[in-house]
Image (cartoon, rainbow, N blue to C red; front, side, top):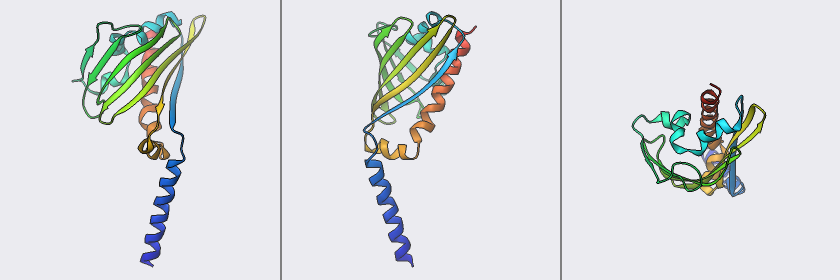
Length: 175
């Protein structure tokens, strides 16, 4: 009986590993919110890394977070580096594309607690005095990430942070 249970466990683990290998090689996670403010008012909060202090959920997780800014803090070429506790880790962001009041594309490099190279994208779709802001992250999905995402770990870890950040952005821009 013990051999049968062991065999079943081995088969289930093998099936899980094989299933994970069949998952897509890339991922995309996104959240959106409608803000009662024109995109011109919201855009500077996203396009200038120094303004992230007002709304980014990651800024509040580690009160001792060390921040380093490049020569430019806003627009194309702006750089922001951070080094924090295990929850925020260490990494670097660089704005690759900045289209006033409509889009910011950021190269996002995580160094710790795990290495990953992704893209973050903010899209602002404005209509009169309201704007729908979409925060997306996408990139390659190596095998270990595929395995983690079989259990929805990326969605559970990052999704709520995006929701919190967008709610904070809404709060600071609707004033």
